[in-house]
Amino acid sequence: MNNRLRVLRAERDWSQAHLAEQLDVSRQTVNAIETGKYDPSLPLAFKIAQLFQAPIESIFQPD
Amino acid sequence: MFEEDDATHRRFAKQFAPPMALFTVSLMLLAPRIRDAQTLWTGVLLALVPLLPLGWAMTALVRHVSSLDEMRRRQHFESGALAGLLTCLAVFCWSLMEMAGLPRLPAAVVLPVFCSLYVLRYWQMTRRTA
Image: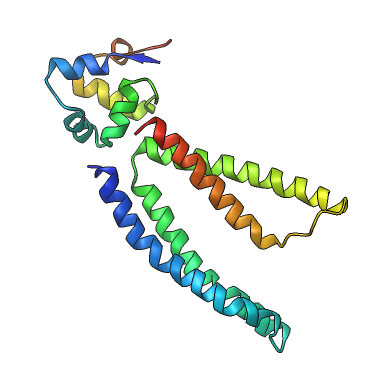
């Protein structure tokens, strides 16, 4: 799955660690999501969408 | 907030290492005495003593996995599932080969085989997402 997490994070000038703290996950998880090595669970995807105040489908797209 | 991996691993090591050390020591001390036990039930009781620290270590592992975030928890579960599958396959294959004449292995090898495969697979998965 493709995602715009890195772009959205960069727009706010947040580090991976800061984003991880906001989402209550580890920095490794944020990095894995950004690099496409891990697809987040639905609750986490909703959390991300809520944090960035954007619809889920604008953040995550199928391959 | 999920702590960085190093701190989490150090805490886990502090909780896991003592019972595992106790398990190893008790196994080494009691294993020779199990066979020489005077009664069957004495032997059974001696054989079960190492399970107490092992249960303590497993509790520490479960607590550790529960404290991890979703990605690491999933990696643990997938590692355990694959290790279980491969261990079952290996044990089944070996038992068939024992009929052909290969040396008979005690059932106690199952746990170290499973643990080795688990650790190897988990390490492999975490390397990808370090």
